[in-house]
Amino acid sequence: MKPTPLIEADPVHVASVSAIIKALYDSISFKQGDTADWKKMRSLFIPDGRLLIPKRATTDSISLTTEQFVERGKIVFANETFAGKGFRETEIARREEAFGFIRHIFSAYEAVLSDIDDIVIGRGINSIQLLWESDRWWIVSMVWDDERPDNPMPDWANP
Image 1 (cartoon, helix red, strand yellow):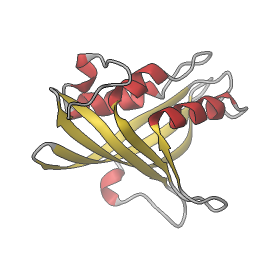
Image 2 (cartoon, rainbow, N blue to C red; image 1 turned 60 degrees about the vertical axis):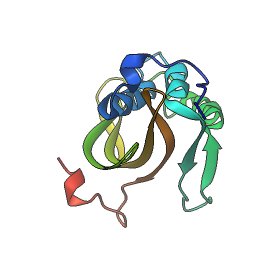
Image 3 (tube, helix red, strand yellow; image 1 turned 30 degrees about the vertical axis):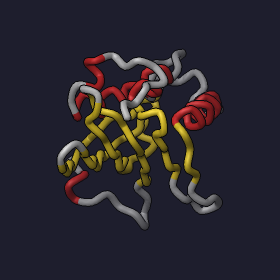
Image 4 (tube, rainbow, N blue to C red; image 1 turned 180 degrees about the horizontal axis):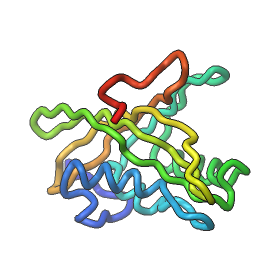
């Protein structure tokens, strides 16, 4: 069954694995006074795509549709930590496994508040599952975990 996108993607953003990963990071990064590009983010995910927010100390894991994640993201980026500031998440290292039309990406990232000085607010790894279908890459699912004292980044993720 051919996926029907929620929003048509820019073909450049979904033409290669590197392009879709870059577009994903670009979609949630924004300059001071702007906001995330939720339209771009929606265009990258297969219609039934899922994002799993991992378990935290006080909450269980939460599985969200792309649209639920966008609505939650709008609230998170409006809070005082981010409001009026720039935010940038960038890939710092990658591991990729391939089989046929599927790819599994371990993408190490760094998150930065960029209002005045670049302040690193976190690092972690995104686990991203991709599918090649209908002449483009789709994000099928994504889950991540953050670096913390009891969960250090692996050696390959430290550039």
